[in-house]
Amino acid sequence: MEYTKINGLDIVDLALKFKEYLIISDLHLGYEQSLNAEGIMVPRFQYPQIIARLEEIQRRSSASKIIVNGDLKHEFGQITRQEWNETLEFLEFLKDHFDEIILIKGNHDNFTKFIARKTYLEVFDCFKIGDSLVLHGDRILPELSQYEVGNLIIGHEHPCIGLRSGERVEKIKCYLTGKYHKYNLTVMPSFNFVTEGSDVLQERPLSPFLKKLSTGDLEVHAVENFEVFSFGRIKDITAVRDKFN
Image (cartoon, rainbow, N blue to C red; front, side):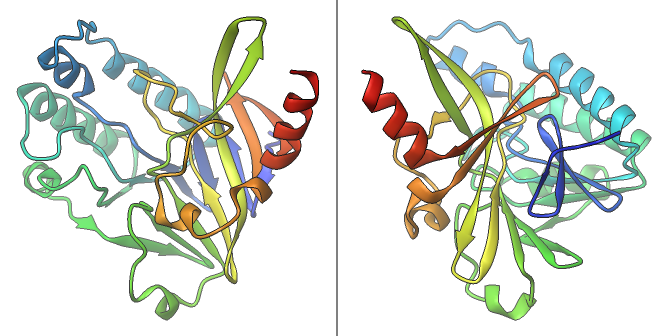
């Protein structure tokens, strides 16, 4: 199967494939319960969608190993009942389907290590595959230069692109690619179905990696149901949008 490549990585819908690994990011399991606690009544629909999508991605990619690049769960300072149930079930699902599971610590993962221990897994700050380093992207590791890699793969940002049709704006999850100093940088969309994410044409970046570079030079690769749409650089998209508005 032919895949769109970015920085030597294969885009397989909301996952990247590199060698035998799938990489996914920002699942935020338990998000619905958190919204319900805030008075926003959202049904708990996300978990079965995550499982169904991941099964299809694995079927198409034949990957044997997986990396979860941060924010497996949603709550910062506790583990809710929904998070306990869904994360434990999800990790058991991964153990049944993959030969190796790597969990990367995200900013929402203060308590994920306790859940991981229940399934005899560890949580890492980052993980190196060949010439690539996978890290969540919520902070810049002080020892980054020690890894001697050419590619950085981050999550955290939840990028999407807002496409306007009349008064309506349709948001589509996307990957971003560009340069961070000497590194090729790849920013992943979230593997989360409660929200599409942050519109890269409208909102300020969250990740310190993106705050330190000109985001207008980043390339946008949107994904929708296993199709990839390459839009070019953010500043070129913005220029075309402004010309017709």
